[in-house]
Image (cartoon, rainbow, N blue to C red; front, side, top):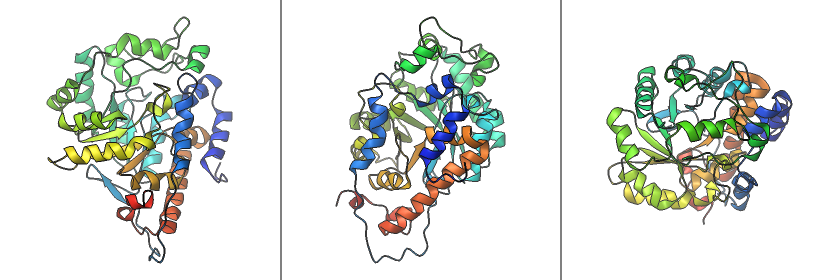
Length: 363
C-alpha cells in the first residue's frame, strides 16, 4: 500500500480486503449515483489561476478550526461502522488522524464507544449527531459525548429518512451480530439487523431517527450542552443563513457523499454562495464553513479553501486507508493529501493557508 501514488490506488487495495456487502455500503450512492460521481467531477471544472514569483521556499499548512489547531486544513469526516473495514475500527482511525496532526469526527453510528475513541486520540475529536425519536436517549448521548471530552457537536440535518442506496437494498445490508451502534447500546438501539426486502440501515433510520426535526433542534442542543454546534448537510445559502441565525458555530456544506438525494448539487458548486450567506449573517462573530464530498487531490483542497471553506473533511478515502492498512493506512492517506496540498500551494504561490484566496479560482 505504501507504494501507492494516489488515492485511487489505495481504493483498489481496499476493495480487495473488504467483504462485498461492506464495500458496497461504503462505496455506494443513492439511486443512479449521479451525485456521487458529480461530487468528484465538479472539482475538475475549477482551474487554479496560480501566482508566480512568490517566495514559497517554506510553506505553512497549519490552521485552526473553531479555534482548535490542526496541522493542515484536512479533517476526517464522520463515517459509520469502521469495524467493517478493519478489526480496530474507529480506534485505528482516530490514531491515524492523530499521527497526521488533524481532527477526527466520530459518527453516532460508530462501532466503538465514544469514551474509548477519545481516550485513544492525540488530537481533537468532534461528535456527529443523529437525533433519535427518543429525545431522552439523544440528550443522554450529548451529555455523555461532552463528558468524554469531544470538542464540538456536528448535527446532521440531511437525513430525515435514508436515501435509497440500491446496492444496500440488493445486499440486505446489516451488521454482523458482533457489531452494533455502540454508543446507543445502553438505550437498546445498538443492533442493526437485516430487514425484509430492504437495507437494514434504512429500516433502522426509519424506525428510530426523528424525521420531524426542525430548526428548533439547534436551540435545543445549545440548551443542553456547552459544546459548539455545527450543522452538516447544507447546500443552500438561505439554509446556511438560517443556521447562523439559530446559533450554529459553523456549517458543513455536504450532500452526505451523494448518499441521500441523488439530484443534489455537487458541494463545491454551492460552496461560494454558502460562504457569502454566512459572512452576511455572522455579525455576532466568526462562523466557519467546512465542506465534504468528492475531495481526492490536494489541489481540490486548494480550490475549496479558495472558495471560502476553512477546511475540508474527507470520508471515503479514510475508509480506504483503514481497510488497506489500519492506523498506518489512515495516516498514509492523510499524509498523501498533505503532500499534494503542500505542492499545490507552492505551485499556486501560496506560502500559507491564508494566501489561498478566491482570486485563485475566480480572477
